[in-house]
Amino acid sequence: MENFSYYVPTEIYFGEGSIQQLSDAVARYGDKVLLVYGGGSIKKIGLYKKVKSLLKDVTIHELSGVEPNPRLESVVNGVNLCKENDIQVVLAVGGGSTIDCAKAICAGMYYDGNPWDFIEDSNLITEALPLISVLTLSATGSEMDATAVITNPELKLKKGFGHRTLFPKVSIMDPTYTYSVSKYQTASGTADIMSHIMETYFNDGEISQVSNQISVSLLKTCLRYGKIAYNEPENYEARANMMWTSSLAINGLTGCGVGKKWSCHAMEHVLSAYYDVTHGAGLAMLTPRWMEYILDGSTVDKFASYGRDVWGLEGTNDMAIAKIAIQKTKEFFESLDLPMTFEAIGIPEDAPVEEMAASATASKGGKIDGYRELSTQDVINIYRMC
Ligand code: NZQ
Ligand code: ZN
Image 1: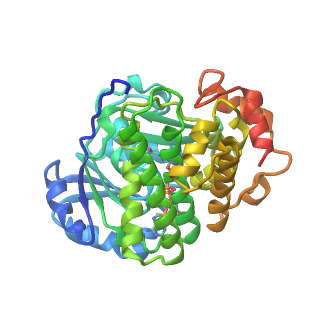
Image 2 (image 1 turned 180 degrees about the vertical axis):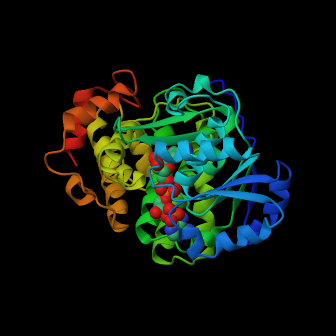
């Protein structure tokens, strides 16, 4: 097992009714609040009203309309609101995009200049406002990690950045708020959670059995409850299991003692930057292709273990098991009606695939140093498989 450090300071209130903790949580950090939310889903489910009534004694300013794949412009607007109104706490109510935008706003409060600077170089972050999140979509794990991903449409770049000051101080996680999530977003969220687990599970460094087994069990949870949540949106057990899995998948737990060489996320972020692809859907399309592409004599053991442990496959022929496991992964995403080709996901036939692949590797210093190293040509080949 590799040495590791592990730090997750987020306080979690989980379960139906946990929103009742909101007033106390906010009071611990201040009484001038910036409420950040997206395109209006929180109003449709009555959550906006609930938040306002719980916080009737504090001053609330609002930033609404945060886009899926949140844009720099929203961050800048939020930072301006914080500076103009001496905001003390940022409250994000929504999915990963809203929480990510709020994180960048928290850091922007203490930065003089364009927030894109610290998104490109997180060493420029010194301090951040406290962030509280109320999660409404199980997917990114942003509710319990210190990362955010922001899109700069002018540069056609979507960039992740992180800083230890950006963990939410408190996250409120009530699975009933996810009952209204559409089938498409439920499926995409499931694929994103699975990808976060697999990005760490497929690593070629030292193996930590405990992390490995946690990953296997989280993946099996997704296969079971992702499907149920998709078919029965108001199934509490399914929504609750997916919500907690979304946090555990990316809060560092599965990465303790193992390497952290991610592969598919860098390839997906380019698709979102160019064509506003839904993040989890892009990952569902890419992941089985990436698996197929890197399957060879040096990776077959790991894929065969994946087949046996996650999919319960039996047999002695490792290569056959590995291939079936990859096929089953693809079929699982298809069973959630996720688009599995460029055409189905809305990427045109004449997309500048070479340019996009170059952008994916450029963001990683010229190559994606994943479970298997991927050159720009490898990324082109994987894109062309979609
Ligand atoms: O904007 P509203 O009206 O709220 O609607 C949203 C949005 O249209 C809707 N939605 C959210 N909760 C809902 C709901 N609709 C009905 N009922 C509810 N309860 O769902 C749509 C998508 O929301 P979004 O926040 O964009 O989805 P998600 O949580 O998947 O976030 C995606 C973003 O997170 C980034 C992705 O790249 C993408 O930009 N990621 C962040 C990570 C992190 N912070 O660690 C890691 C991930 O790998 C990922 O890159
Ligand atoms: Zn992701």
